[in-house]
Amino acid sequence: MVSPKPPPVPNHGPCAVGAGTAAPAPQPTARWLAQLGGMPVSSNRFEVRPAVCQDVKSIRQLVTPYVEQGLLVIKPPVSYYEALPDFTVAVDADQNLIGCGAVHVMWNGLGEIRTVATAPNWRGQGVGGAILERLIDRARQLGLERLFCLTFEVQFFSAHGFAPIDGIPVSPLVYEELVKSHDDGVAEFLDLARVKPNTLGNTRMLRTL
Ligand SMILES: CC(C)(COP(=O)(O)OP(=O)(O)OC[C@H]1O[C@@H](n2cnc3c(N)ncnc32)[C@H](O)[C@@H]1OP(=O)(O)O)[C@@H](O)C(=O)NCCC(=O)NCCS
Image (cartoon, rainbow, N blue to C red; front, side, top):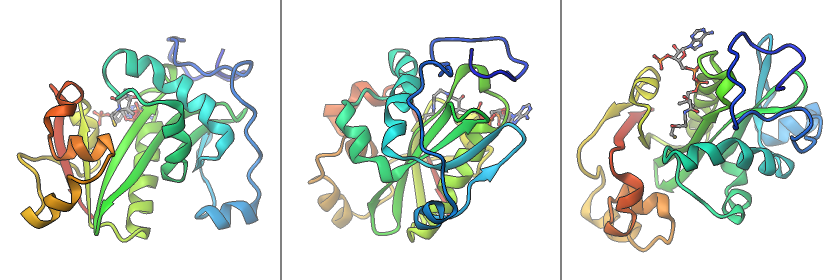
């Protein structure tokens, strides 16, 4: 079970991160949160906070079923540790991880929203939206002016100010620099052939901040 006080959606699918399976996450202190970018956003049942190393195991448990469904891109465990500062997570009242998302800087003023996911039995209750809004705040702090995402969840991202785009919204000079990146997300942004299997059927979306 996800929580002693579960939300009213009875779908305990494989993404559910139960009290017995989640890695113990450290209790955030005010000083620690201040260093990481502020106090957590709280609601009655969950809070949103920056990710810490101890969250990676639960993040991977959460995203694995979505990877298997082709909704999220497969990544080796090391990628989650490398990208940890990009990640924001949501936890329930028992500190079980119920959602995650990341904002990745790609270029001056340009970033990407990645790996937004909510545990199946928490979907439709504002968790993903709270994470995305926190990531947008973080993007502004980082000096980003445009946020890209590649997704099947067009309605969700549209509700948060993203709009579908065609093509690659950077100048040829920036393209020349971005193409030197080894990051698969950047390759997806550039629509390179080597990542076509990752991008097929997804919608390219952009939000101006
Ligand atoms: C996309 C995803 C992260 C959204 O997470 P979520 O927690 O369900 O998101 P929210 O609850 O904030 O919003 C989802 C819907 O529920 C609605 N909602 C939000 N809070 C609600 C509440 N308290 N009661 C009822 N509905 C609510 C929202 O209006 C939203 O509707 P919309 O999609 O029509 O705009 C989730 O569906 C998911 O994990 N998808 C699989 C992975 C994926 O594809 N990720 C995107 C690629 S980056």
